[in-house]
Image (cartoon, rainbow, N blue to C red; front, side):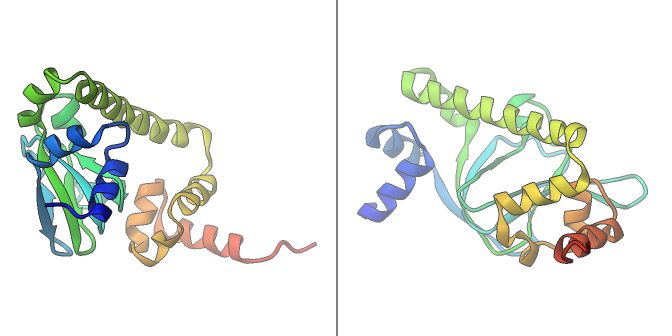
Length: 197
């Protein structure tokens, strides 16, 4: 049985749903712990896992042919994580999802929730909002590379998650921003130094 704090936590996580709706979803969910460094979703996995991060940090990356890793996304506390490929496109994941820290998740099998969502208009609406949110985040990322400079992308990341610098190695942050670690270092120095007149 959930205590009042947990109830409020999950009502916030599943914003827009009533307590009975949330309880229905929670009956299908389970908690999962990932140790730092462990893989949550492997490249090529055809998984319909959908998880809410209650604690921790997950990096989504691709191993390129030359052996370099390109970080596509970082997800942290109070965010959902799922394979866009599997959930939206119904195909195997092209990316690797790895816990950078000890991470606690509330996990659902998305495919098993579909019948429930199809028979509950509120859950169906919530599913549609979730899918649109995933799409909007992907579009925001593309737009940031077209419209923002690397320094502006860096500042935006700091605005969204100020403690990220202490939690993610520079090489991962650099590839997330589409720059080299040397360029990231220069941006940091430029921001840290007062403008000389």
